[in-house]
Length: 163
Image (cartoon, rainbow, N blue to C red; front, side, top):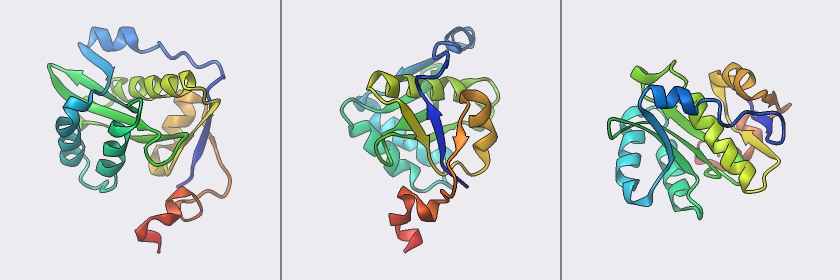
């Protein structure tokens, strides 16, 4: 497990997946605070093994501007992505329901979030505590591993689990 770094001013095509999502009737949109309970219930139900994600997502919903995107299909949430949730400049958490994985939805959520970070003035984004998704981020956004950045030596070291 390591943190990754992404150059937001690199040649990332932030609009790559718009057409693909449209053809699948999936909308990637900025979360709306009025959907807070729906979003948090979705995170809790679909990602039970990731106990801190609900808290991080809730924080992102109260940021100004909101720093959470959701994927919606048939008026149901099928994925989410947050940034500036754990700390400023960090992307994540993010997740897509098992039945919708492998369709580019996670990549679309990632790119929308990184585009929002770039619009806010960030030059880099950190993808924290990537566990087994390192190869995904390397492939999708040319992320590079930050040396010697396991959770116990990163922003996550303040978590109760590490004390």
